[in-house]
Image (tube, rainbow, N blue to C red; front, side):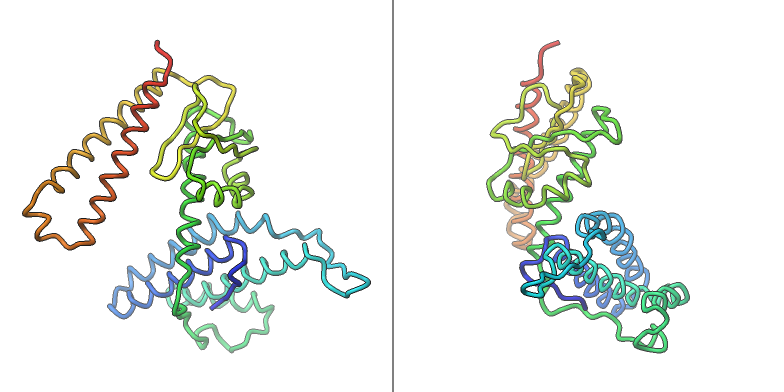
Length: 298
């Protein structure tokens, strides 16, 4: 399985962690004769994580204009070429491992691609004779969690852009209100967010500017800065729907947490998860109410 350094870019650590997580889940599914589950897990990784996300992100690192010039004094390869080479190495390694994962389910296609990847000179006669990918003993959960937050931010920005009618190719500034720990993460990942969400600038603010359509999550609030004024009635309707949904979810969680019989019988992890859900729903409800109150009157 591919390996990356601890100080490698987030997307490299993430895709390798995703690959290891996928391999572990596939092994469990196969051990339980759940071939349909195994195929679906591989599909989600290959087309979701690898193609939809990683291939778009890694383009930021693949600077093929770098000539690989060597410093005349030290003989060292230029730093920008090292970054491109490292990204390309991870890309190819993950793709090769993904082909081996997919091989039992699509033997003929993966065989052709695998031979082409090695330019007709593979390390074995057939991909079927290679070792099936096995997960590493430890998986980088920090990278998985960090990228999940970045992906969530990108999805929220894309949704907001669609809601307020931003032109497909237009790049727009975004405002983000969040804790310092997430500001650091989003700041380091700004190039990823800007590329995948068409954000021209990321602004960290103590409060989202009035008049901007925004979305709230348990970890951040985000708004797209766009000249077109928001449709106040439509935004009021959306926020009203959200408030009703959050109130319903909060009431359901409070009923369960107030049920002594349920608390006595339920596993601790279920109770903790319910408490977390209740806390997050309450926070989203408060944000939605504040956003509704901040809208200009009709």
